[in-house]
Length: 329
Image 1 (cartoon, rainbow, N blue to C red):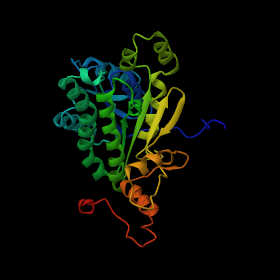
Image 2 (cartoon, rainbow, N blue to C red):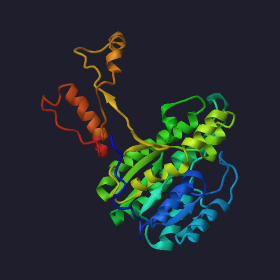
Image 3 (cartoon, rainbow, N blue to C red):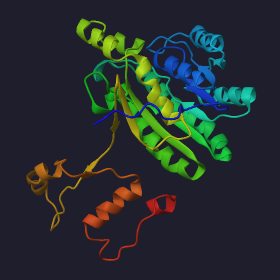
């Protein structure tokens, strides 16, 4: 298969206002620089913490803003803490007061505390979840009304390979699992308002990832050589652009490889009688067979397929609309 033709029209962001959280270092810095180079006015938000969420410094955000301005772009540094609703609101207001609009939100801010479950402290759990789950939700809520009123918005959240599970990742993966749910749900809600919400799952050599493997020289070398942060930025730029080809999806950006990650449901087994634990046990190979699967685009679509498999659709059961609270009873 040939590679995509690179001679197509350049994706530009002229006139657009973009907020990049966690934009002072690593991935966020690359996003901010690329979007600014393509014409966007960028609010670079970064609290300037260590990878575990401790400390604060205005320097990282200011340095990226200086880089953008030196290249002829327009940018604003911001140090609000989006782990609080007040911080997310103030950050959003800063962009609106400066430029009068807000078109794109890149939720990139994150911290990392990798520790076995029985060693995690309450404070560590709170910090991780407040930043990833809380920060993403706070920013979505802060920009939503403005984007809905404008009838336009592009939001790029940040998930992780931690969704696949590994030792020491429980708190971090819990936060990223929440981001996955926020991405698919807000994408469904945003469709009526011209808002597209997607997520990137990056693999890159950053402070966070290199610190996690600092005792493994081989992995450190692989990350550094094959997964520079700049390779993720083009994927984020596409999802942030007005021509974004999807909503509610996760794109895996790992070096020069881009792929899609998705939730799928197997065909499963339809029992001819009330199931017992033993029937479920004996049918487990077929239940887990991924040879045929579906990727529902909504809760209603998932339940609708289950009804079809059960034969309810053929029996004339009315379609269910799960978009209103009353229908969830």
